[in-house]
View 1 (cartoon, rainbow, N blue to C red):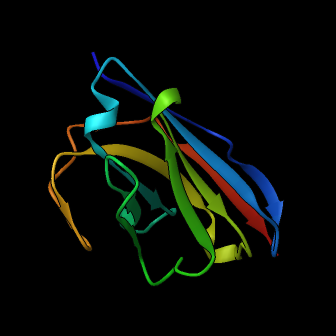
View 2 (tube, rainbow, N blue to C red; view 1 turned 135 degrees about the horizontal axis):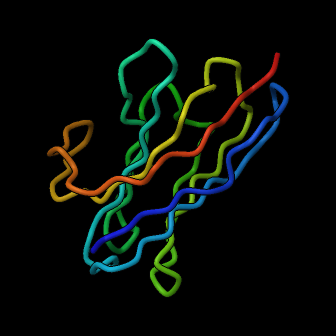
View 3 (tube, helix red, strand yellow; view 1 turned 45 degrees about the vertical axis):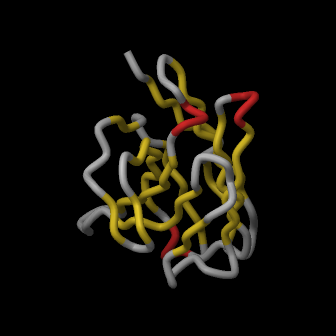
Length: 123
């Protein structure tokens, strides 16, 4: 059974930084791209970043480009999302997911999701 666990969320002041982690077990982590999504209260889920299986390709939504950085450590089965210059509009539950297909801003519905981690940015 594939399992994804996010961690690293919390409360931070505007302008601050957080690093989220997504650790995957039970699957061929090193063979899959991984995406980060977020969902704010009352809004649709947003696809914000992705990284290919070897880290060679990345994607960032315009809303986070230049502020967030994605990376992975296949030896640790973990993907990271470094979030800098945080804004109040970044407040959301952040999820990671294994991507079976991804091209730019398009992705196939992921079969496996984490439970999410809350990020709250106070202004």
